[in-house]
Length: 113
Length: 115
Image (cartoon, rainbow over all chains, first blue to last red; front, side, top):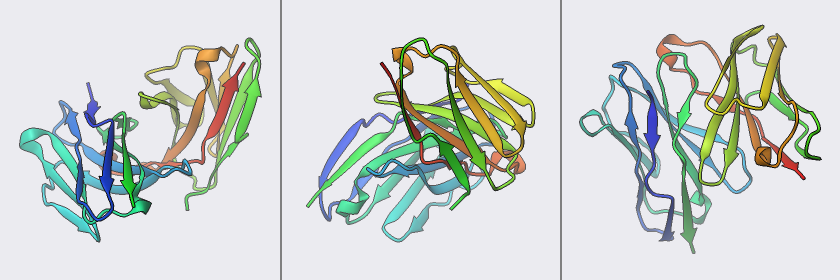
């Protein structure tokens, strides 16, 4: 069965600090996709990134970076030089084939000015 | 932005009444989903659809039913609302893509309060 664990319920950092959000997943499939979504205080869910199980290259997009390690079943998300606008709930999700996304419980990030 | 509209956006209803939430898409995507979001639980799947008239249950389907008579509309019905169904409901859509590579796009959410 698919499962996603985000052990950090809430994180609080001071602006400009780096912060890493952890995501650990469980799956029996060899082909799967991992996702991160952002939910800002306004409530909508915003897609951030997708990564397939055969591509372990790290990805960087501006201040955001993602570290995928199959050996530890982790797909961690790092925000460099955090800003107040990064304050949100972040969800990690897993998908096997065309089944629905399975989400972690989310990590609430608060960036304090 | 993906064309997904949820209606209503907010609703207060009484215990025991039926409630229907509507999700409408303009993207012609095959898959549609209903999730609920509750503090401490993240997003949990209620039901989903993989085509017109093709639906399946999710993790928390008890007390809910769905229907999809057209590609663009996916209805979620609470047959007899209970206070435990107070939640924020999200509709999502995704296209069919190899090995599940397609991301899901979400509607704005419906905040339902059962009193």
